[in-house]
Length: 333
Image (tube, rainbow, N blue to C red; front, top):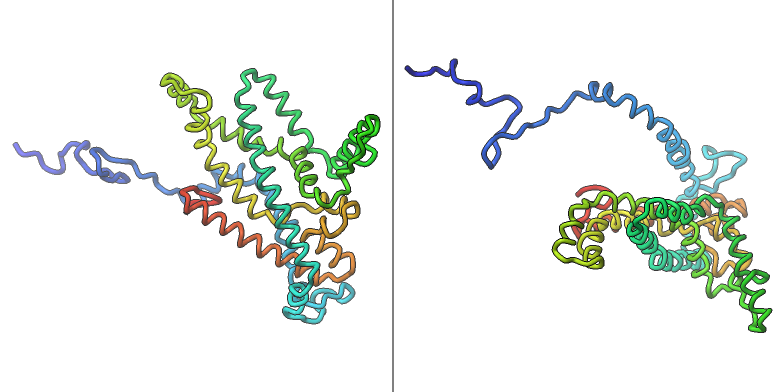
């Protein structure tokens, strides 16, 4: 009559690897595979990352050993191991140098201008391209827009010189119509706008790739449902597109703030003589001219280390702010 536990149907037995949930039924708990099994499973993917890891170690982590020269009176003839120790003397001289603080102000000012004027443009371009219906036309526009990314800064500045320089097309047109000339390339007061426009022309098209990928991940059913409910194009963009891009925008903003002190080296180095050091000197060019160019390697290393520490603090602060607003940032909280 009675059914023993040994003969109880399997459906009524608690199963291994499953746990009760708050709702009815059970939920499977995936078993964690041993690391050797995961290593064999992902062997091909790991091998694909080996070249990138090697490059990262060689060009990003191995040079960190040279930071010790910031605390030395480094002499290249005797090397790092035999150079005399300076402690924090290089940093004390750095903080008392008015040229360093002028370069710091220029760096922050140029970063702010580029953040305000340059950062929104890839987002706007991605939104515009996303509204283009014909795929062939969209691909053509995208290719043309991000083609300048592959140009060097020398070529980019040369093109701007030919267009708006002293003997450029703009001034030739102004001379022909007796309207005077305007040399935009050598005016230190408009140097921030000049460098920002160069960065926009060169890099904005490349930046839209990330935002186009984020737009592709948004479910089209949301647009269709909102269109059925009578939502127009602007309302769909405000309530669907922009919220879908919010996480990527925050991530790119965090990365941008972390790289704020590295506004560019080659771009400013090429144009420094044209506008003067008071307008074009940033932390990177300061480290080059007052460190490497004068053989004062320890002084340049101290300036570079200071910039790196401040950049790290800025990216951590920006990431913390992203967590406050409920976004993941660089990593989940």
